[in-house]
Amino acid sequence: MRGRTLNNAVIILDEAQNTTRGQMQMFLTRMGQSSKMIVTGDPTQIDLPDPEQSGLIDAVRRLRRTPGIAVRPLEKEDVVRHDLVQRIIQAYADHSDRRTQRTQAWIDAPEVPDEVTDGA
Image (cartoon, rainbow, N blue to C red; front, side, top):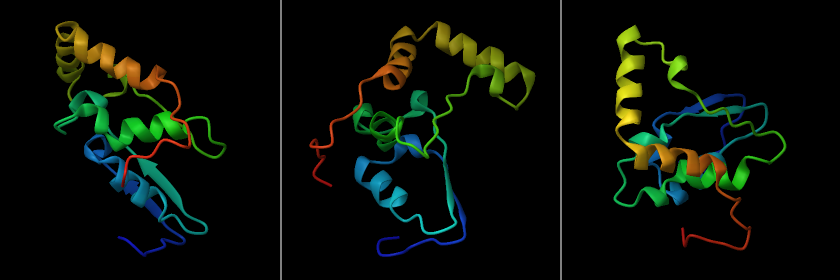
């Protein structure tokens, strides 16, 4: 992906919770003229050894107030799978206070100052 510019395209990054900061930055900076990017991910499903290294969480913190960028957190009501899946999600959330708190923390966390780098 390095060195590419994606013009006149709709670019979707799914499962973004498992990207690193460097991968997310590389992806986001590929957008060319007349393009749109859609990034999806679930911060409760981070598989990285250190969840705080998630490129999704980092991008939301850095970019959520940037003009032209929208962040739309989804709730269990947004699940379009079987009706039972909403109840399963709620059951896991009810029994996983720490993970639920971390999910809210990534939404509420302060923005990352521009001078902070991740070495990527």
